[in-house]
Length: 202
Image (cartoon, rainbow, N blue to C red; front, side, top):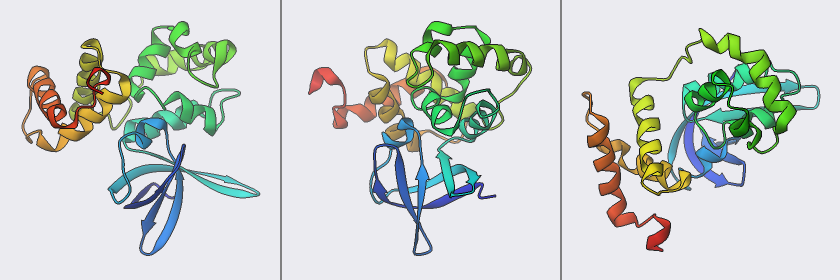
């Protein structure tokens, strides 16, 4: 089992990246949320899940361990394959998807590309009870803070893509000690002053 891949990004496509590891290029399928926050030449560390079939070995990767863990749980749902599971995590982080399922939020689930009404109903039916007492391992305090800051930025009018980029750009400025959400939001906004990522600024 290949549980992680660390290396430089050599190629980026609409739903996958090629990571160079020891002179070898490894193709990894990744969600949109990953595509939007990396660039050619970036050093990345992806948590991966290998799908083994008779005619192919396919690797799926995620920036957060929590996303990889929920991806594996989604694969247990009837009719949900790796492409659909990856699409589910393409817009929202694991904690948000889990909350949608536990909260029976069918409207939001149905809006996910490739899932549809029946797929959303199956997710709730088959995973709601499992997620009730399920802790998505890997959802650290830092990752929870990132999710909260992204939501707050969207409340200020930024798009999901813009908020993810702002959080990603400001992450290396976060101190090791605990930081409150207000301070984290200020850092994200400060990081955006030079990037001008907001739609209204374009």
